Image 1 (cartoon, protein in one colour):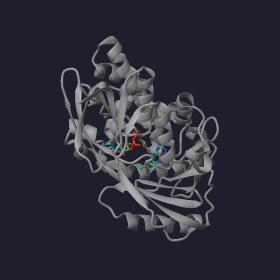
Image 2 (cartoon, protein in one colour; image 1 turned 45 degrees about the vertical axis):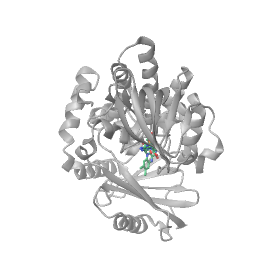
Image 3 (cartoon, protein in one colour; image 1 turned 135 degrees about the vertical axis):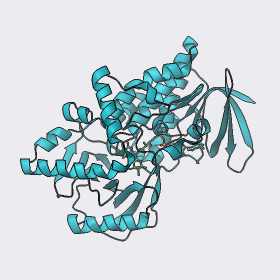
Image 4 (cartoon, protein in one colour; image 1 turned 30 degrees about the horizontal axis):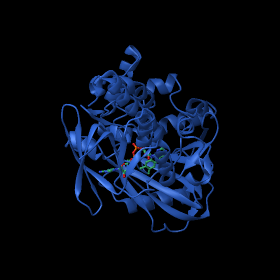
Length: 404
Ligand SMILES: Cc1cc2nc3c(=O)[nH]c(=O)nc-3n(C[C@H](O)[C@H](O)[C@H](O)COP(=O)(O)OP(=O)(O)OC[C@H]3O[C@@H](n4cnc5c(N)ncnc54)[C@H](O)[C@@H]3O)c2cc1C
């Protein structure tokens, strides 16, 4: 049986960042990815300035082939039922519009780790000083790798997390997000921006943007509703209210489950023993579903923590939890009403854009945001957000007691 230092499950951005730290420290690192690389990943590909900096600093200049058309994005435009629009530019200028199929593969290659693609993680078993990781190549026999540590960078429905806590995903609300692609007849939405609707009638998460000559119409809602009906309703709204005229959707629509919620209430999952969970699998997700920057940073922290644990011969979970607290602050601050009101936790200036509106529009926006938030009432997050916001104010941090 082969022995390695670290096995990482998932060949995405969190994995690339973790692998970079491990390979740089001279550790034998194997990434196991269930799809064939380069693999498709459903994502708008709008990179935050912080995510952009991470890629440049760690992997070098971004090649053109890893970008969609338009190749960059200036920022985000919020739309409200009262028809007020708020465009907000990213701090520091436009950022690259990533084509995730190629950007993730590029980052993985730049990390220097060995990759086993077309290979699914099946199970793990921990012992005192190692983890037995079982995986299977598509169409092949199951095999086992002996590793000193295992990192689950395997996304929102993380099988590695499930192997530690089998009932976990049933205990949190899971959402469905789906997108359809349309040829454009006429689209007045500025293609330099990502567009997001704070509109309770349209759903929990409604977005649109241009990509490679087509327009994306995206909808998100609690699992159980009908994607096609939701999408039709939103497309009709775009036409009636914004004059967006699109051809019927092409056949290549797609959707997936999302674990939206843990970062709002500081309920992250970082693993157990020698198994670390990182990226979106932990619950990291920034405002309006931006997950690449926190995937990259938490992935790097997971990799660094393994290196530290080996050098100092200390339990990796203690080191990881201490180190990752900075990323928890950055992400959960984005949802913290006190931080939003009195600080600048986001990477575009919402307070400035709000203050630039006439007073009557500001009042409309605040009312619209309030009625949008009521859509989330059933999840009972309000009190928990208030409690952790006070905690952050009083002790300068979020409690680690909420973490798994
Ligand atoms: C519709 C949509 C739009 C989005 N738009 C944006 C955006 O514009 N900007 C942004 O920053 N974020 C966006 N996000 C969020 C972003 O895509 C994620 O937060 C980010 O990709 C998380 O990265 P990750 O490295 O944690 O894992 P993921 O990117 O989810 O990758 C996990 C990997 O694990 C692999 N895997 C899963 N199971 C197994 C297994 N059993 N064995 C082996 N491998 C396995 C998967 O194949 C995948 O390659 C969007 C998400 C969605 C759904």
